[in-house]
Image 1 (tube, rainbow, N blue to C red):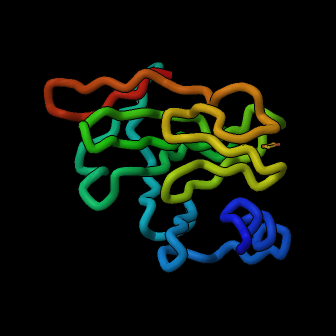
Image 2 (image 1 turned 180 degrees about the horizontal axis):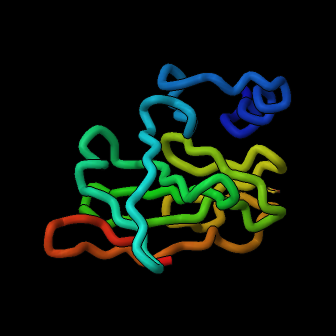
Amino acid sequence: MESRREFMKTISAAGVVTVCGGLSVVFSGCSTVPRITPEKRENELILSQDAFIESNMIVVDQGLLKPPIFVHKTDAGDYSALLLSCTHKGCRPRVYQYSLDCPCHGSQFDFRGNVLEGPAERNLKSYPVSQDGSGNLLIRL
Ligand code: FES
């Protein structure tokens, strides 16, 4: 049986990347991963906690010229914010149900940004996440 990784390489090479849900795979383009444009303040992005009502992960746009930021909420209520720019050669990792996978050469990262599989050797860039008094999330850039 083909491994998940081999399967993903196969469908990526074929250009068939529109699979959602049914194969336990969620792409960032899929409607189950909300994509939002945050409020910006100097060196911070501000997200309403409501952004996590439908999903424990969201993709935050930073504008056309910057890679988006992936934000994940754990069951314990902790957040991680990761730049979706692969540390190997800068491609944009895609969001799957349990990992962030780079379509260019197969690197894989967990939702803390740690390298699970190379060729990338460095973890994804992460940003500190805090909350203000209203429960909004603050991502410090
Ligand atoms: S650019 Fe991501 S694995 Fe090479």
